[in-house]
Amino acid sequence: VRRVRDEAFVLRTQSLGEADRLVVLLARQEGQVRAVARSARRSRKRFGGALEPLSRIRASWTERPGRELARLEEADLLASVAEVQADPETLYRLAHVAELAEAFSRQGEGDERAFRLLASVVGAVGEGSDPALAARYYELWTLRLSGLLGEARSCAGCGAGLAGLEVRVDPAGGGPWCPGCAGEAAPGAHRIPAGQWGLLLQALREPVSRLPEGVLGREDRALQGFLHRSLTGYTERPLRAHRALEKLDRAARSVRREDRER
Ligand SMILES: [Zn+2]
Image (cartoon, rainbow, N blue to C red; front, side, top):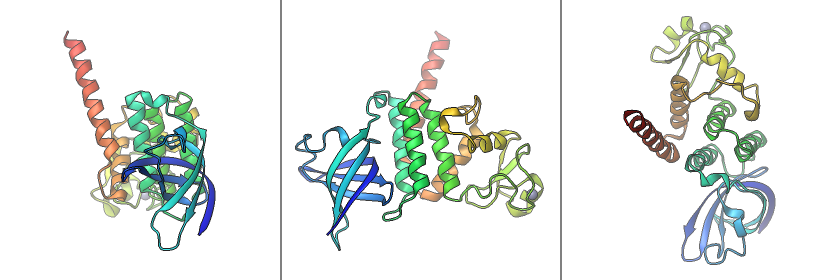
């Protein structure tokens, strides 16, 4: 039996049998951890509010050879974002972030940068940052840390700086390219309007809490489409929380339309 203690975020939980919960964690040293929280459904006393989505906890668990799931022994709450998740948009944005954190992490492979990224985004939302902006920042950096944005600053073909150009990107990978190189390298690539890539590069230089106005804004559809297609190209399945968010967006638009027509 191996006993482990680590700092972690709760990515999600689900019911397991009559009394238990399956808990998926992103741990600082250990990467993704899948554990059973015994009796967590029957008695809230044992783990308290520590197993809420995106709670930051000090966890200890045991691993047995040959067992797929670890056993969660203790979970002490360090920081909670349960309160801000009373707002449905914040709830879904953070669910989207947690879903990505699970899809892009591996068991037994700790990733300090991925852990710090999640901590900074969850912390910023907890302190009142726009959850939509924070989620896009998380998407962008997840692609960056996974190597899916290439060098980002310069064309993968000729090395030219990309900040002021109409950039070509391929959600299937490779690139980014300047217009001159894209013709040959990626004839089916998507176009990111001139200037937008510069904003993306700016977002990669700043912490989420200090993003300048207009960087990763809501209206930037080309860039958002690219981020989303790149992420689902990697996960190879639709993102559940993203679908829920699109429904919320459509509902919000129809309410605004009704308001205008009234
Ligand atoms: Zn080029």
